[in-house]
Amino acid sequence: MENVYLSRNPTAKAILELVRKYDGDHICYDHLAFRSFGIDGHGIDSMAKIFLHFGYKQHEELRFPAKKLKALWFSHPDAETNANGTGVHGPLPRIFISELLVDQMSDQCQVDISSEDTTYMIEIIRKYIKASANGYEYAALASTLGCLTWETPSYSDYQLLSRESEYAAWTLVNGYALNHVTISTHRLQSHVKKIDGFNKYIEANGFKLNSEGGILKVSPDGLLLQSSTVADTISFNFADGVTESAPCSYIEFAERLLLPEYKNMPEEEVREFHRRDGFEVGNADKIFESTSRDQLTRKAT
Image (tube, rainbow, N blue to C red; front, side, top):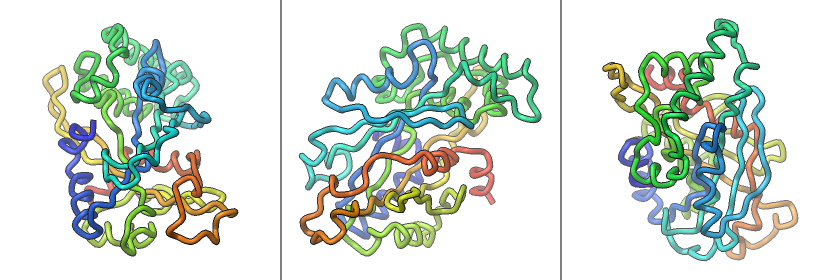
């Protein structure tokens, strides 16, 4: 999954190389994230089952009413087993899987979209899901191979979906591909382990960060700090003969601060479970915008 992700996303590959050059081989992934269509078996469960099979445990559900999304996150009880490794060979990352609540899309008619168009958008998604049949059984394999489990979409379908839900359009062309990986900045060894310094370092090297809600997204308790790049784009060959750019994936950064009861703990004794765990809806909602048209337009200027 990581190999496919890096082959399609030069920004992520370049940043990982940049951090390794500066900080050494201390990169740990906080979490890996995937998107899905929450309909006819193609939602969260289709991607989660391989992680559950290998011992991951499910945690609380997160809801994003405006985007018609829900998400679940998972962690492994042995996450610290490979504490000295790096990247995919390091500590087992959390897994964050979201799904579009397709049947609720009819409740989300934007100002410039008619209810008839919204109904048609649901039909578009159902058309590709129907063509996929039981393709959801191979979600993890499709992610590993970098292929779709449904037919190649047409550009007209993609355009119509993107007007109503950029999440839906992204999922239509990327399927179960890894949406992003997240570097745990607090596990780095140099001064860039503080996310403010990390963000400045990334920007100083010419990379644009997602500005939705501010560069730094902070949870209400102040203990989960996140930022992300703007997604790369790929040249996609649509089924109706059109070749156009479409958003691909991005890379995220997270700093988890110590829980209040551990704030005076010596640094050399700190482990990941002493830090703020889980996710925050407000932060994640803004991170989702890394693939949005507004952010991509800003990146291009």
